[in-house]
Image 1 (spheres, one colour):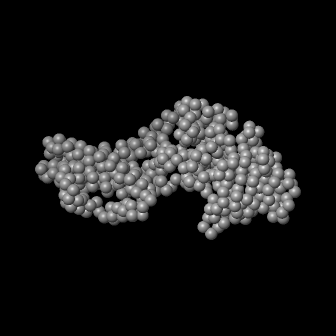
Image 2 (cartoon, each protein chain N blue to C red):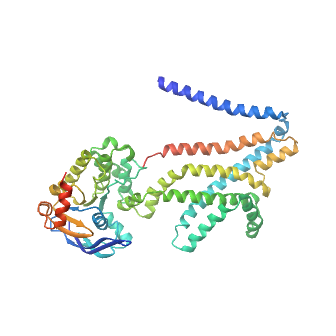
Image 3 (cartoon, each protein chain N blue to C red):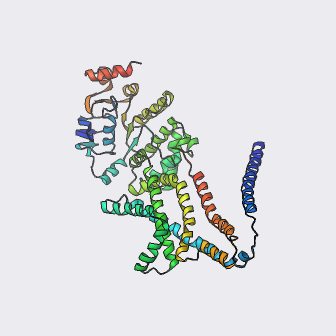
Length: 252
Length: 244
């Protein structure tokens, strides 16, 4: 009981110190630039901010699901029996990882989306983001799958699992456990990368905040809600992945 | 157990692990022990007989049936036997009970409640009931190996393969696991054991194979192969192993 209570006090103390550290830094920097805060503009355009935030949330969550599917598909394609298929998947990963997201957004939107007739900016943006993150997620998952020990595959064969059962009961649980921290990091990146979609005029959070700043000729009142808005989306992803890690923790 | 090897060869790259094994187990040999120096081909022979690998040439027959070479048919054979490895090879993300229940349900099509019952009963029989819900990392080496044996026994396999089952265990745990294997033999399960435990082979095995350099150098009942080896190679090996 006493140990429990002193643990609680330690947590409270540590949290307070960490909070003081960051709020102190914030106060220090803003005090130094001696800025006259004016929150009226931000308040006036609050619905526009909220719309931007919701757009970012929707485009990110759609892209997140789609990117996981693309990543899983890339893992399978890179194990395909046909060399050409493996090469196509391999080159895809290298093309995506080797070029800036901004360039991909421009090429996809103005060339590919035009060519195949995707004229909804929102949908196009979601697909681009998913294709980009999918390449990274594919690599993370591939690493996880390859980390499953040969002796585990032996055991799977010995108990009589077929290929599907081996994936379901042995490879996937172990590979996912292995990939979880990196996957969470990639999903968080995806949310933040969605801000680049503003270049094709998708009314997402960052674009809307910049517009509001322009309307109100406030220099950067909008940036604080912007940062907080992204954190509201990304922090749960981090926390969720931590709790999953805790749940799936096992030693080999 | 009727086991027959005809001209069995297996190479890995340029390394010839088995250079042509011809062997027929005598009628009524229920426990075959394989001895010999490391790298002599013991584990390779076990993997071929357990259906985990396929010979490059030659044929193995178990209970009068040639082992198939094609994967799905071979999987069917593997489902009728059990294999226990040196490193236990339990699934680390599953509890002891789940390690047993999942193969029972999904490979042997045992209904969930019956699978859970059978797994619990097998663990209890091996003195592991209090560990049923622990993951392998929370168990000692001896406990892990007993769970691995329970996993094969619960499937009602009639033939079990043991690949150096005690090489990773301390002497006390080794004794526990060997006692368990001996008990399985008296229950009527056929055993194929690769081991360095000469005392165990002498006491429990009906037939001993001595493999060295990919060849079957000597075979026969333990009184013959262990107590009165006829080849210099086998004699030298036993002298070395039994010196201390």
